[in-house]
Length: 550
Image (cartoon, rainbow, N blue to C red; front, side, top):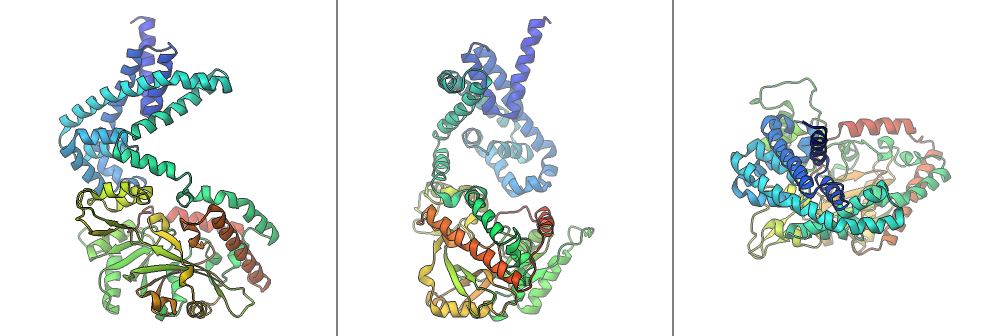
């Protein structure tokens, strides 16, 4: 083989290999190089197509050869639940070309779909045929669009950035954004995804937590300086480890409350690290749970959740012993079991009390509105979710939770509850509940809170059945009590302005530091930063990876 031929094959292999890292990025780069005359059109398209096709076959082979072992990894299990993979495999066998087209236009679906096809799919010939057909249509389209539009983008950027690789990289990014926007706009699901992504720019309640809290960093730094220490908040609740900053036991905190006001619960100890039992034997933790139920007269359904957890992660409604066994197998750390309170209402009551004052007060109330889907007799559950201006913002969470029901058509007027956990990131809407605040409720909450030694700052999450009874300070049960890192969650009310939300959050943090400082002056030492970081490392290393809740 001549040197020139060897160079061509090397370039072909390099482009093909690039698609294994980023299909879209390599196709766009190839289009820009074609436009610049540095790569032949047929050569560029063929090398991209070859790499994409081989990558697709590689995903199928991974599913076929390593699929079962792959799903045993916690990182993979979190993102690809076994039942979801099996459903995807069956969908591919049944729908074939629709599955391929959907995976090309909807980001994040191709990898699980193709791995599932290899793992549980039966029609290998259909997979190869439809995948090859998709590649032969998709690749020229993307490379061609990049070649046609890329030069205009590149020429514009040269005026600002000059020539060279910087302008080329900028054109690559802008073309990727443009092409991804165009491809998403070609399908109903894609348009819903695109609208949700655009809406997040101004619907700040759906911003990632780190983005939302970033502007608050200077304020917290000032408070730390003013009150002589970043860990001052750990002294806000002397009766809770680190004041409730990280890793505290939900069961231990609830045990400090008057039992008549708390949803009955029990702590299931962590699994023994070296315990091995036959698969057919009832696990010790399940036996312990069933013994508790029998002793206390509990019946299914129950709520199971991590004893140390945040943001509603891992909260599940358990309807029988088999479901309990699966949950406990997936959550080896300590688990809190609670009697299920059907509500139907839930509120978050944020309470503060200065340590040297006899009475506390309600800082805010959050009225939690659970998402409910209403059928129209014609559209599938997935279509209704993606069409809804709010539900589509968290479509991935809802669709994963409703795995197996997404194609179901709800009869006209029939409702389907999309979330059980009263947490914003699990799909529940938070409203300002100032209309629920009364002197009777405030007196009851203050009386309960003052019975907890060393508690001054935090949020009660409660469930109740009658609004008037609740407002009178009666007829509610406490599900959780959260400490120093609680949020006044009414600030996520979609009718609030961002400025109002930040004002509330800044006032909350100022109270937290002030209470911590006053407690410290009364002789309650704050935790050291080293202690907090060590416990945070332990907590985050051991916490359950299953973030989805019911």
